[in-house]
Image (cartoon, rainbow, N blue to C red; front, side):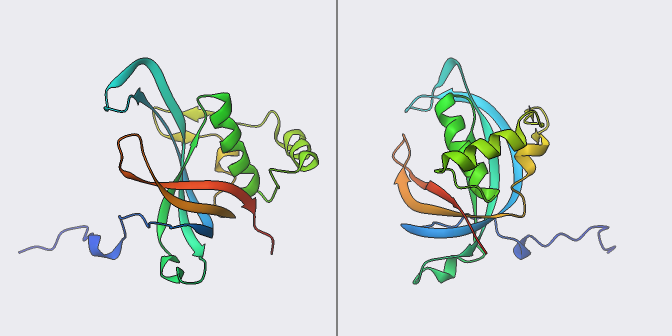
Amino acid sequence: MTAPAFNFDPTAIQVALGEFRKGRYQFEVTSAKSYSRQKKDAAGNPIVGEVVMGIYYGLKCVSAPQGSENLVGQRQLYNAMVHTEGSLGFSKSFLMACLGVNPRDINQENEFNRKYAGLSWSLDFATGGVGDMWNQPKGHVVSLECDIGVDTSGNPQQKFSNPQPVTA
């Protein structure tokens, strides 16, 4: 029997996402991919004419609260939605914190706006591509409050809040 040209060992990678219970964790941003999908109601039925858009950021836990150290190295996804002004605000706070800017400081936000205005904020939903600005967080570390909540169908769902920059 001839050996295959490519021998992929799926046991060497992790596909399950970590469950980050209540506490503050630090995550390295590892990837960014845009998406667009039909919005659905609580029963899972598509809502005609309503679309959800955003960026999925891959996260890898690099620091966990005492008692949760087993989660260091675990993966999770941050959903940075951009289809409404409110969702874009949450996503901007995440992006600012990733780039070392305190999203609760108006002077720092104004500086962020001046520095990054007019740069590539594009999203290519056909390829999953993102403009240069959405890629900026890759390799940076952000601090997030985590908890487990429930989605509209009653299933467990990872919750993130209060993004803060990580200072050396």
